[in-house]
Image (cartoon, rainbow, N blue to C red; front, side, top):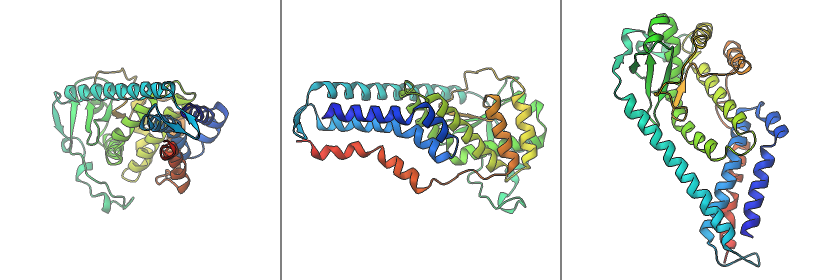
Length: 306
């Protein structure tokens, strides 16, 4: 029965990630995209965790169990923990390197930190905790991003300060403030772990790129309530027109970048969403939580093991 439980989880995971089903549904709503990304790895992890909790001995639904399913589940979780440890170590090394860079006061370059967004005529959107400083990297590339986990640090390059006007820089910083307030680096660290863990599942990379795009669209919408959306779009096109080389400071698992490399169709979607003033799907509906609950259903089989 343990082997049947694991097989059922794998079959359902592959079905949810089937090409037709995945690409047709994922482009409709944010909650569906997140569900399709999360549900398959959750089914696999909770199924193997349930098997580990039940052990390799005993009876379930009238059938005796063996080492096969238990050993496979153990391998899955050991691999998952090793990947998590590797990503955590890499992220920590990135932060150690980052903290060697000088810190600058953003008030010297833009007035955004002195603005009260609650009194801005464009919106009454609450800004949360504002970042008043950033780490400066002395490189010619145009780069800005949040790097870290729960409390990331803002990173900008000298090239960005040299090429952007104060208004354009203000738009970029408003975008980065959104990533900080949404804790995107923290949540995408865990999503990146699931991506690494289930890269062998179909459509993993497609869904990952969709999530990255939706993350940027949400941050753009936040920034569009602080600065003119047209100015933000202009800044975006200027930054992405300069090629970005991968630097040691850029770790996609713990970093959000304003100039995130995107294929032309996805970049067009980002610009259109920004100029269209369409609000992103900020709150997940009840259906999303029902889908998420389905991922924990294998744990309900534990009481039936004796």
